[in-house]
Image (cartoon, rainbow, N blue to C red; front, side, top):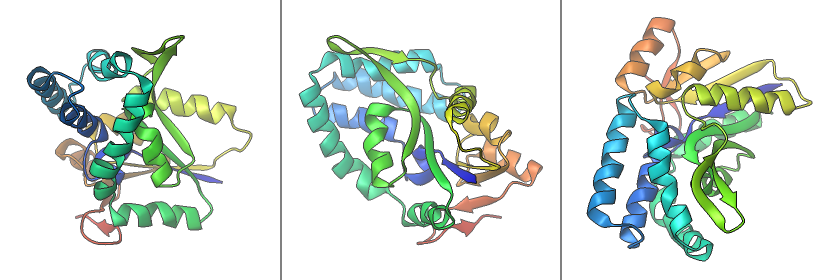
Length: 226
């Protein structure tokens, strides 16, 4: 049995759902525009540089879940999926996922973006297993804190290993697709690492290690990158 694992942001999606959700909250008037926008952009730059302070980011990103009633959050999320996510689903990404599905492989998304934002996105891809940073819930709703270890960098390895330990099925091959230098820890331990439209650091690592590189942005099917 084989398991195909996909990063989400800038891998299956042409964009970053965490960043886009923040911009969507600004559009809805749910957060203070100037301050939130500046912080959101800085955290995005830090992530792209491989310098993200995940604890500081989650304190920022999960706070709106605690500040608003769940009915409002759900309505905003529905609009977010239609306005910002569906247009960014890459046809070649769907083909890549479906190729693994046709081969009978188990499917998983593993992402640092929180599960409130990403659960409906995983459903759009019909991927049944989602490992994401989970927002903590208390008696009154979301607390604004993460529950457990964030699925970021080495945290993805820990979450994946915990999930695998719980499965009756054993997997003899693990595939992992990602665009980001932040996923090098997991790419280095799976059987079949593949760089998807990689950032410069990941592209250099892929060339050094002989990993395949693909683009999902050049048509309806995955295409090799030199």
